[in-house]
Length: 158
Image (cartoon, rainbow, N blue to C red; front, side, top):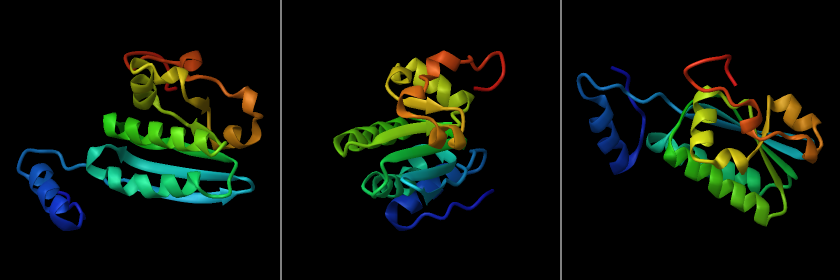
């Protein structure tokens, strides 16, 4: 059994919920922010889901409120996206728009692309194949995930 390191009452409750016999323990979420020129890149690794949402909220908000004109959220190593993760992405998209900044999702994998497609958020977010493409492309060059959408049950990864 993996040990989940969460502090406070919620941590104890989550440890009991996810750490019991026969239950899968959630994988850790790590969020790293880097500045590159006039862009802030937020690297998300692991599950962007309810059990770790607190780890993603603050770094994303700080990236949006930084001096960066473009915020790139790198989802290449995001293994799972649930409704809480979607809510975090949407909230930060709204913050970016209010601040007059551009938010781009980069490296969106199959599971996340499927969730964005089903929720119709694929028409809202700007997408890039990877971080390099997100940084190099002019604003009008970004595609919507529907352009490259590949269903989970077939085809190459998106």
